[in-house]
Length: 111
Length: 119
Image: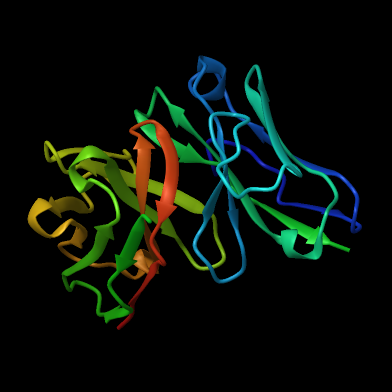
């Protein structure tokens, strides 16, 4: 069981908007620690998608956006495309564990 | 360009020892934390621990403390993950990742190394 909770799967038609939630607690997201998001395409290494809650690294399309509030964070994908099919993971730092923690991951399916 | 190149596939028996590597290039190796992430087949990501090569300071997840050792050789910009006695449950893909901060932001990843432990 992961410290950060994500829905196992979300789906949407091409062009639609989907959101992925990441729920933590008072020892991680709620403690003010930043949330980062990673995209893992099938058979590849994860790639940093969003850092420090809402920032996109160079080269990441602005269709991807992140937000954080209270003990939760969200990743939104607008204008869904076929090559967005991947697993998405949130990550934060947990003060009780003194360690980084990941969410269980969410599989995005484009219908 | 930051590059992390990991050692190859390993097939080992339970009880054997193993050390896998990750060679970094394209940045100042001693000025960034670098660590390891486990992914069991069909499962999510698990943060294992990190090392700051400039000071050889290490930090481990409680889930992996005492089970693995992370080390680094500054002279060849390489970080290692080591097991003293493998178990079947160690079967997984292991990724190395540069950390922009000790609290997270894994901004560059290796390609992953599959470790299979089976009798």
